[in-house]
Length: 67
Image (spheres, rainbow, N blue to C red):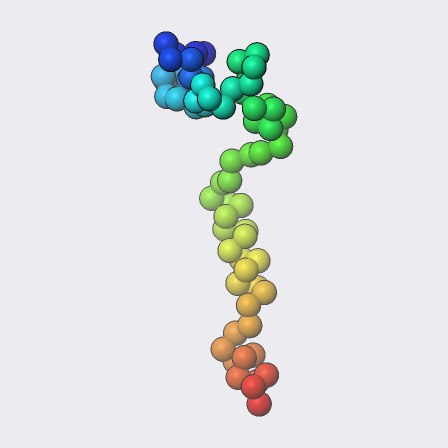
């Protein structure tokens, strides 16, 4: 859906893409249409944080390396 200013809006009237982001045919950028990008969820953020924590040395490990 398009608002009176040419911006792409959702069914609630919220602006999703500004007119300046649309291509010459008025389509949204291809990267948003192909599924290459997906929104991050709380679970994927949690997984990311777990990986970061797993890869960090504990205080004990750091002390052991110093010795």
